[in-house]
Length: 309
Image 1 (tube, one colour):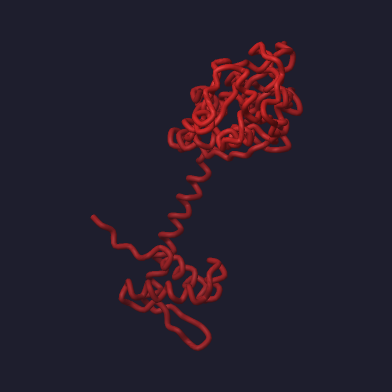
Image 2 (cartoon, helix red, strand yellow):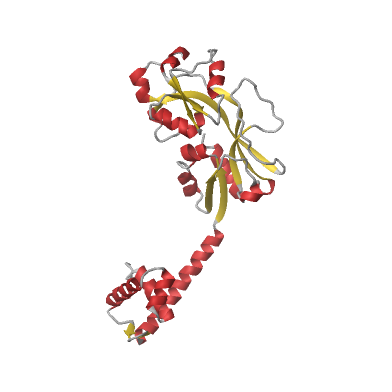
């Protein structure tokens, strides 16, 4: 059966004005103008076909019908408020710190899937390149890329110099994905100035360098058995996602982690001209304080992340 309900905004305006017997105080409470309160109450009176207030010279007072309707409206809004507060208290929050590039190019495009799958978990996402400090920042988990303490890595591989955390004490680490790099360029540039079939073809293009990962191009060229080259010019950018965007816009060829471009909505605009993908000295990890590692929220988020690649 179709409900016959008054406009919610009008009901809120009436309840505030009736409770305080003042249109101006109701306007302050709801952060609107006094005129807006007056219009909403008039709309409600027209809906109900009955007056709710007597408008006097310097004050208003409720009509008998207004008094009974106020009691019902207040009771209904109180019930809605209690249910809302209870729902917010029961929602499980998970605060996540992510790398800016992963957040922009990768994670934000997938979070809708996680939220639809686990609506009971309320995500709070922030981004940072800095080593995480869980106590100071108040985050539950952090997605970072780097090297694990005590692990050995190939010195000839692309080096990841980011510090993942300020301290490894009482930190639980979940391995997520390897970091592999390869050149990428826009499909339009490839079709206009291609083919690109050998490393020597790079000399016809500008090379885009990410200054946060300065050895990506040298390490990839070394793995390809090629001499260092600056191509037809050099473009320096400050972040990996800027390198990807510059490549998409046809500014040149960038050497970036494949993870960052694998599932972009516009990945068809990019071409990976070479089959060679070089594994970096490091990887992607989910870090969290040891006392939170076994919570259901962290376990669900960790499992979901692993399944995304």
